[in-house]
Length: 142
Image (cartoon, rainbow, N blue to C red; front, side, top):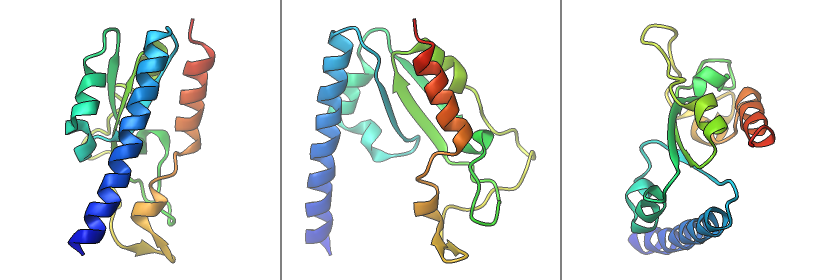
């Protein structure tokens, strides 16, 4: 219902604004931050996100998660274009431009079910190679 949608959106907006407040604390203290959402998410248009996008010294990495091994329960690649806003150049370099080449492989549509799993829920989990890229960048940040 519209009322339930509005209730859930208000909660999500509070979380988003809190995460942006945390990013500003990290940034102002000279510490690293990273903010990830699907590239096409409406959250990128929110005022609080725009304020974070305008912070100096930030990078905007766009990549496809299939390039890091995101697959469906049956092993079909899932493209999932993702955006990470960060102030860590190593993280940016590890992720940005890791885009799937046309014709490289077919992609599973992030819709419906496979083997009893909702594909949208399944694709919320980072593949191990993406986790390693995130950790390596954070551990090697100088």
